Length: 499
Figure 1 (cartoon, rainbow, N blue to C red):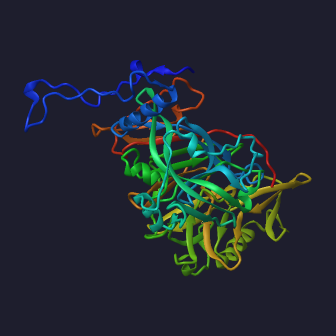
Figure 2: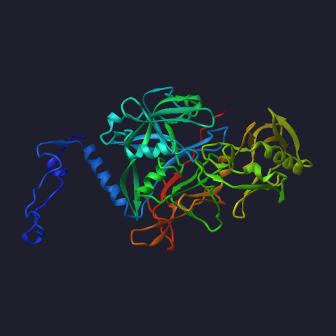
Figure 3: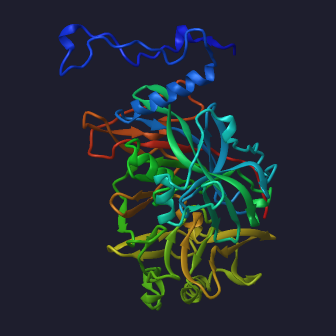
């Protein structure tokens, strides 16, 4: 694309002529008209678009907007075992695939000269490397930057003794890790306002990874980085809400059947069956107060202190975990109760230390309902498919195994995608609570938004699709709701990957 004449498209009226009646308090009656670019300077189209994206981002702060990100992946550990989305960073925008992770705070992507970063992916996606020097809107974050100070307070950032650079080092639960430095640049997205689509952007701080270890170095399920949806100040959801662009709430509904799919929303999914339980205060993760577990309505004999939140105990909701994990003291009673309930209908067997069952019919009519009972008098009801995994077949019989795992010597309970799928989950950070409801995630959902006029509306999320152009948003009856919603549609990935 050839450069465009600045005199035609890039004139910015930074000052203007005012008539004499406009003079007050000695303010000069005549102001100088200046151009953003000299008349004889030719400006690249990408630079003009970058300026426009900043302006459109300001528009979004006072308009109802829905942002549609395409997301791929599935919970199935024998296929993909993670959900990931694409984000556009920098000027000109560059595309990066990042895992959706509610168990961490920071968005980071691989950067040039990265040590240990994969060069290819078994997910059949292209891997990219971010280069701050190639983006006209990128800047490094110094130790004196207030945003770095906020990160230091939440242990998401540190300060390098060399170069006054804001840096980070993360270790994840699976033993993998990454380190790098922070940059500020534009997150680019399409804001759907009414029936129109507007290119918009917001300035955010994210990590530039220069070193990766553990499973992050493996290419079989490699992505460009991780999109942390935690509640600390360095998370994108916190950054966007502090700028008035999004509400401090997000939701997801992950489809468990077939190749996966579902919906992820930076905003509030509205469904009448949603129940809420308060978050445990002052925790770095999304901790809930699990009080007991019931199998077929009968409460298991587990000391409630097993689930109490402390430095090495508690129940965490984490979309970055594929399976689910029970505190060690709760695991054996849980598995024992399920085995006892089906002992007359299936053949129990052990596979590599995991309790499995040989089944010749559907699990739905044989296995019991499991209820996780939380503070606030609410329960999360799990179908057999929410705590079992089909491993393989022996003749005409299917082998189903307990999908919950036990961490030796640990009192942590983690609810990963195995449990989270086929349910709406709402993370209300402002209200410090999490809500959920069983739901068919192949169906559309209603997302509450609020316009600058104070009116609230339902946005039918099912009407947004990456294949529809132009996109159409349907609005239903007015209700009280959140400020603005960012909608992410989860597209289907049919790649079969075996661990």
